[in-house]
Image (cartoon, rainbow, N blue to C red; front, side, top):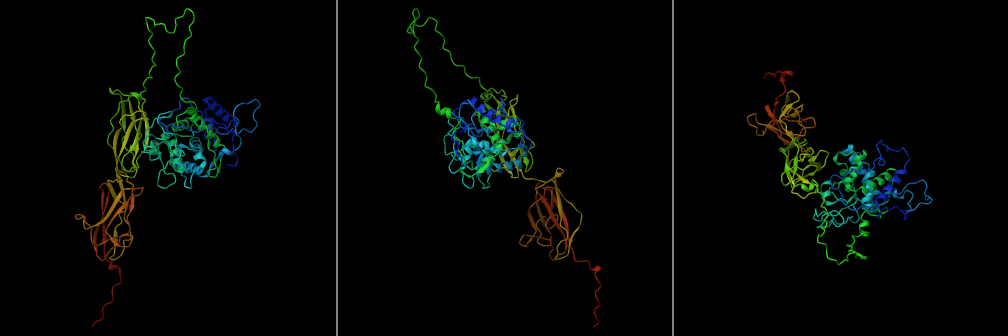
Length: 571
């Protein structure tokens, strides 16, 4: 960057109080009464951390360390206040610059979420704030032309030593570590989260956490799950905390969100500043102290010496009290709570929902336990939960039951599995098989009663149109087959009479791959006639077994309408 700031406000090993004071100062620097952005929504200055805000469903990063540097305070007076103490704060707009490719990725992610999840109201500035805190905007924009980081960005291994304990879940595919997971890429996803949250943001057919387009889009979808509306302060807080469950993290992200909302600009890739303060600095600077040996007690006249024998009634050593088990700690296994057979036609919502019960070893129901439902399986499926996600978390009720959101079938047919697991508890998951069948119709009719006629060697003037329904409702995208058959009693393909033409103009008498439109309608291709005359039959069949026979007539032109031929001359 053109300007270098050597004196920047860092949290580093600062206390929570210092961070909170910095956030308060940032908010205080805003013009009074400014409470809405350009779209009339509440801004981050109103989204103050709520005391009961929780992450809810773990964290995208595994609560890995993050950068704690705070943005500059855009004070109109750069001079220090007389008598003020502490670290000076850099002034100016340098920190508002975001590397070009990284900024483009954030804005493209916002645009995609505006289309797919308009109710989320995701601002790209939130992605920028999280990107700043997680990786310093991909280490100052050190990415190549397609948005992939020049070198991997990895958090520390999550081995339980000062961090969460998350053993390897990806075989080292993303983090190169086959023992423990590590947060990966510009948005610092842990592999187990990326497995279901990953997205292809640049359209190259891959989901790469090291690519800023993929990572930004994945982060957007992650923040928009659970039907959160990010223009609502409480939902914004919950979404941010779900990314990293820390109140200090929430404060830091909100401060950058507010800062970027005041304006930003594009800078060349690789020229951004990399933050220096990290949330784990205090762990590095303050290792666990060694146990302090007991000090010798000085003796005074008349007092027993340290070597005096114990009294006849020895005191009972105190033992630290064990923490009370949480409801999650008491779960022994999950049991089905009456889930019916899960099946739906492609494109339809499943009529039944999955119900799972958390119980203790003695069979007692356990409430207030978070159950995660994940769509898994070897077969490829585009079925999702309502909202377009492949994972959902639900808290059990007082009866210990968690009911998963409605499943929405995609267009791919086949079998898949929904696995229920307890969040924060290593118990065997419970699998629910589900099936998506092809779209079907139970009725197909013509939309007109016009007779279909043709002269030998000609073409039919009218094209047949049919409509398919299922249980009285429109049957859209249903597969249809059209066959010119020998007769109603002999449904084999006819080798003479009317015919269709393929793309090369060749004669065909069976057409497959036809589908009804959104209104259940299908207009058949044009029909032609060979030199044979008579009555012929076209049979329409749909997936699901509905069928319709349509009569076709090929006859010579009516001679009665033509002038009488002249008589032949006599011999």
